[in-house]
Image (cartoon, rainbow, N blue to C red; front, side, top):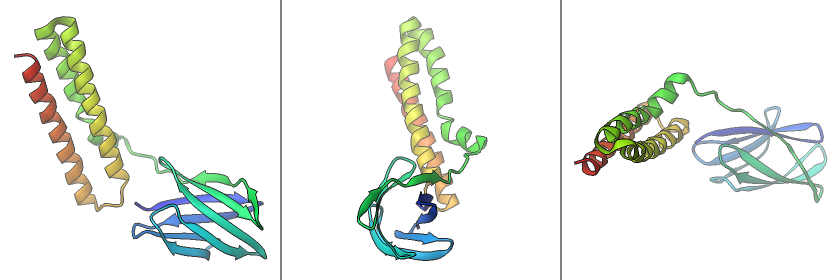
Length: 172
């Protein structure tokens, strides 16, 4: 997965990029300060405008954090993250297994009353949420578009079939 981020230390803005091949690059205005292969968590030591920097890359959920030392002293960088807005159709394509949850509530309610509908809806909603989370992760990955499409459809169909099998087993 390719990640791009920026952090600022004393009015100097550094650009960070982690390419799909695992190379971490720290640069200022296109001029590379440090580049090394790492799958996150790399330590970069470099000099910029007469200042010695040590930058440790800390991966986080949906963003990257940096621990920075300038001339041996800890400094707190100001972070800015370039976030991609996910289009509505992607949310729909990733979350369509939630529709099975609506069917599960009505189907479970018909066979098991209110409690049956609640149990079936909770189970189907949980599995729909799992599918949505996995699918959004796949969408944001660096995989090719055809492979993303295939995986998202496969997970959706697989979760939907699992929901139907569980519903049929619960309400025989």
